[in-house]
Length: 289
Image: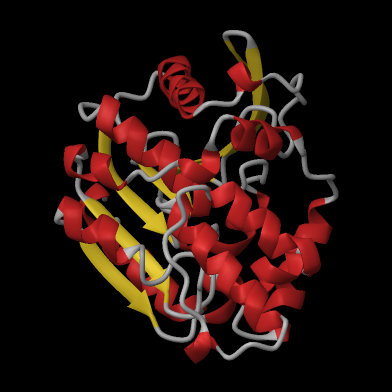
């Protein structure tokens, strides 16, 4: 299989890219979550299903295996990620492509499609994070559950200040424990994901997440912009992922897109329900072939 690995200059930044598969095949750019993650777990998890396509596994600016950037807020904005995508498409001389976003990666995928509908053939969003005030509420509720409260007794309003709610949530419970509680259906799936990330052999960058938070990430609710997204869209979400389900259904509803709910799957459905994910993923990409 063809594989080209490179660090590509895009204006003032450089990004790590694995360009895999037949060069003449339909192109898909993969956008990882975080902010500050890498494309490595996605390639490990869904790479076999995408072998018929030209797949661009991108580590976003300052993230993963891309060169570290200074901790400056101007470098870490959604618009900057979108500009990188368009610069990458032009650099590779690709006429149009599909975008596949996981978690936070749904935001640059959606915004790219909104700004450049002529070059975005379609979108696939896996367990997307599009409403961060809602996510902050979920995290706060999870922190209370970890402190022994019953979910049935917990009523949390959507906060005016999500950051304050999170500070309260994380004051007595480690953030990782709260996210793990929501994302993983079982200890086995959590350990398998951690084993995969350990195999990556890199230390995650902190600057992207910190700078996006300073830029108001937890106040970001992309819902009003969903009606402006024109390319065909499919949402794939695990019903055991409390960071994305059921809110992810909103993206499908407001765009008129498809929705595949994977029973028993958490935030990383290639771990929990690999066959169901493969079927949903390939079905969403049929029109590209």
